[in-house]
Image (cartoon, rainbow, N blue to C red; front, top):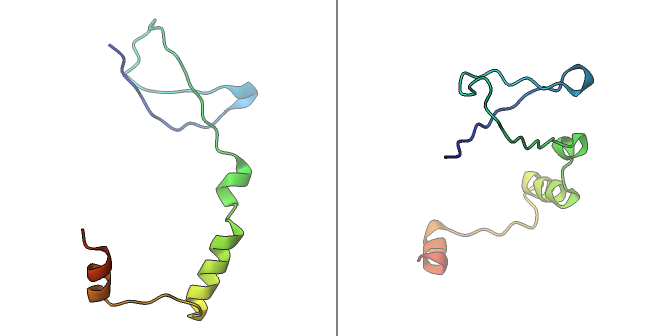
Length: 76
């Protein structure tokens, strides 16, 4: 049976990663996948999103509708 553990960790000196958990029995064979957040991705905001936020804050070029109009158009 395969079990999974999802946990965040901080990379230490020389790339060392520690995963303190009682769910890993000593001597168990494990397979490890590492996903690292890119420094650029964590702070990057798409320019189109910034433009949209500016338009909302300035209340320009907005598409407005009432709840009744929404229900009439999109009610499933």
